[in-house]
Amino acid sequence: MRIAVVEGDITTIAVDAIVNAANQTLLGGGGVDGCIHRKAGPELLTKCMTLGGCRTGDAKITPGYRLPAKYVIHTVGPVWHGGGKGESELLASCYRRSLEVAVENGVKSMAFPGISTGVYRYPKEQACRIALDTTVNFLSEHPKIEKVIFVCFSYGDYAMYKSHVSCVRNPAGSR
Image (cartoon, rainbow, N blue to C red; front, side, top):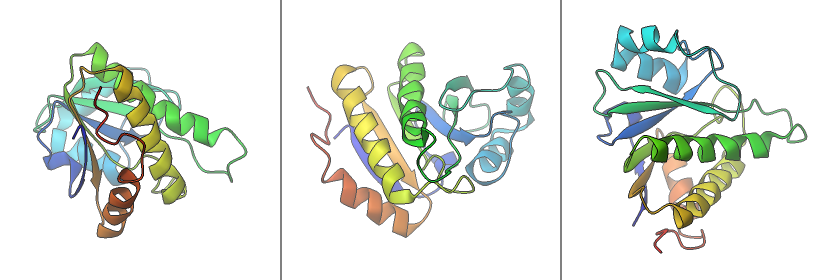
């Protein structure tokens, strides 16, 4: 299987890259973003200060510093405003751009958190479907990424992702 779902802390996952659900400044924040910055160490903030921020739907890469992951791919998800402001397209772009940045940097394994589902209030079920559909479609055309792990912080999110991954067309993403 090229797609896996686990319950846990993304900062402990040993993969080539973890994805950070960041804000536009890339200078740390709450939730996953704050946890990644704390565990990576102050070098991550210093590096992020040189990147000039990041637009919603885009992604940028830094070293992982003190994390088990070699890289951190920072992406900025959309704030949920009811679904009529292009939120689904922006969220899909977060996953697609993160995967593109991974390929550009030789990443073979990576881990995603739920993007925009915390303080940005994106409905979790919709976000889960977008994450899985976008990832499966990307993997079907890019065999260089060998493994994508969706890391869920709560059991409820884990159960939801497991349920949806079994329904996604070609969840193994194999060619």
